[in-house]
Image (cartoon, rainbow, N blue to C red):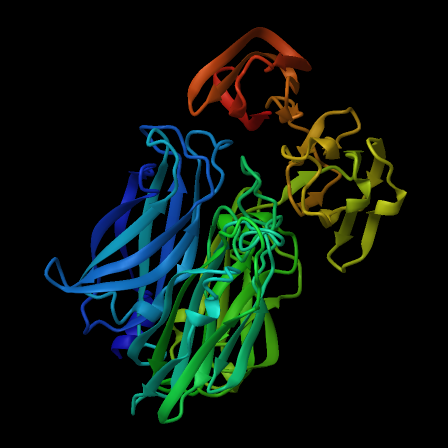
Length: 625
């Protein structure tokens, strides 16, 4: 009865340990620790799930930081100042390149930390370790917020064992990593039925010949009792990062991490028989020959759990689309095919579940999913149909029911609701303006409808370098998705590769007014959902702006290309670490190209920021070679 009440009320508690505190580095030692206490539920409180939300923002008192550093979030002490000392890494933040972010910027990530719910009780000290060698005059505003969902646990936590934890040299012939990642033996406890291995691993340093470990792909095996249970390449595509564009080399793929990302750990579930067991981690053999500095930063733990407490139990982990979550910005808003993530929380394999979904205020739809998910296995489900919406803000609700045709073991995690903004409205007839860069074979353009019919397709083999293409598009009234793809993952313009040129993509009305201006520094591409209507009326009152700076890596000159629909007062500021270097004031401008000679400046990183009528409208990184 108590849990049924919790299901109805969906009682969530938030424990905020770090609340917009300013963090910076200590360049003398390469790190600075920020420790805060939080009061978590006591051991008698049933916890269903714990989600850690981490937000970085532009600090109030100093300029924002620049570099991509590896930061660790760790449980340090539990039970008060005289309590037990702990050392469990619960999250790993890879900071973004922040030089292009403006005041007021912030971004929120999240990661499931339910595995640590046995320790996150009563008074707990949480440490945020910020690494790096930047000056103390720049930093981040940090918030760590633990969302605690009350309810019956899915499994009973029994024990935690540290497997490997530290920074291990990789490729060093005098210090082979295999001598450090030695097999770990443990005994399963009598109550245990499930083992879970949780691994955070990132590669750092750059040697020869492969650029390991930051810029090389290498494989890793996890063996349990002599049998391989996981083989994967430790490599991550960064051009699809939800946080974009960034000021540095954010598009370059890396050794299992990307700048501006809270890493999701690898989770491996294994059945536990009674007796002794062995866990082994094996890295791909490798020997560096020059500049030997690669290391693998690893935190790996083994959790022992009881068998799942319910036979049939499904949870709704998230609504991906439609959603206003920043981590899903690249995918939203959408016009059709809402997407959700579910997970099997029961003993029985999940073979079916009924999904009820829809925008609030419109008729709900149902879909019966079928599959075969083992315990703790998840699935991303694309739901059929268009997404209804009113102009502006909408709410979308999804509910799961009848797992395997049975009553759910606990329905408190079966319903979620998201807030989303309706897609853009465009006319039936519009003009697509596409200027290619010097690598047009990387790009393709598509427009598809709700039936997945491709109505417009500009193929890469039909494109020429540095060429402007103008296409008039005529679409029936309806909903559409537009996609620009870039197979090299460096967008239409990227500051570190001026030789690739400068492209852009815009949608105009028939009078030449810009309806949508796409970001050129877009990594893997761009996405736009829109709805056409014959009654579309262009907004002629709100001024429009487009900005482009090229080249952003230069030895001497750079050019600001500016366009607006009405004359305005413009100010351009060039700064270094927040210190003003140049300022240019224009009393009345509407459009044009403005050239700035940076040849007299020292080599380094600068920022160009444009203020229109006193409001910051654009900021970009410049590199003076």
